[in-house]
Length: 108
Ligand code: FES
Image (cartoon, rainbow, N blue to C red; front, side, top):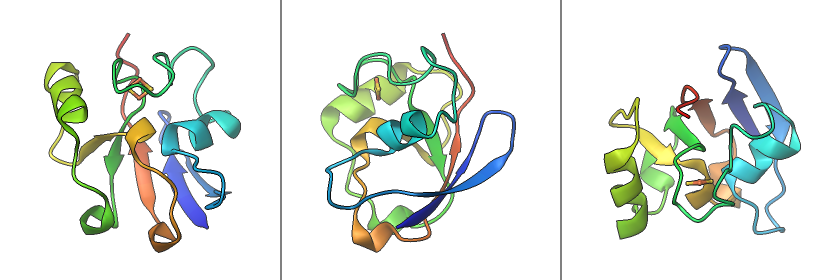
């Protein structure tokens, strides 16, 4: 599926994300190198670092509810907005075609 990722400099990138690899949004950002190595995905996708925080700009109602771990991590993170999610907890699925997200500022 095509998704649009706005990087931390504000530049939009339309990328292809596979739906058959159980990939999450953080991994997509990393695979296209849309954030410098070491600034995203620090905990490896365990909902324990918030380096993958992003703002969801579309399809919000199609995303799964936040887990307790995700809520808890976002409670402790910086720059959190109502539409903040942890990218590592959002798995690429067919229904997210056209998804738009913006990476949150680096918070380390
Ligand atoms: Fe650490 Fe998502 S990669 S919370």
